[in-house]
Image (cartoon, rainbow, N blue to C red; front, side, top):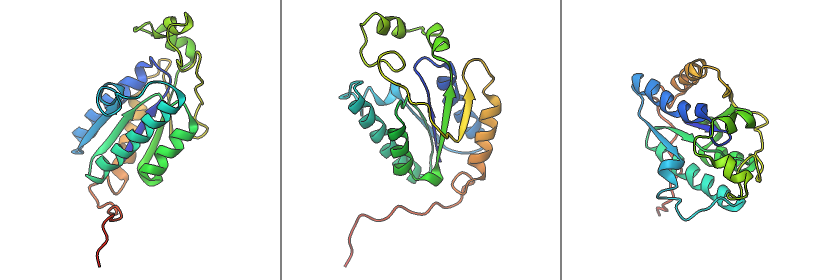
Length: 188
């Protein structure tokens, strides 16, 4: 299963969700891995910036890595802004719809700006950061996410409990067999 948490920059809920989910899933005996901007943009995607095209490529690469990790039996938790609906749909397609749960962390822009410990919104409003999601680059709210978390202050534990139960109930989460990926080798 891939749990994909998305939302605007600076959401403490978007950042808290992956680590709390990982702890809960580990407690149930599931192996997990978190992919986020800190561990992906420093290595695999360090050649990408924040243009629209680079953001799409960032999510494409993440989806491909998540699929490989899923094939290896891990529950993968991703935490990325993912501002465009088309890239979220592409990630769902790459991973496989049955193994993909989209979590939208819904926090108003004003709340994100209040919580902006890095000063990114202030810099973007001052023209120092181009392509800042929500300021000078759009954020497309997901039309039909699998789960919605109130990032403005609600306790995420209820959401995490529901997600953990859904992962446990899935064949892959319950330790069952996933269909193996189609072979890319020809045998004659």
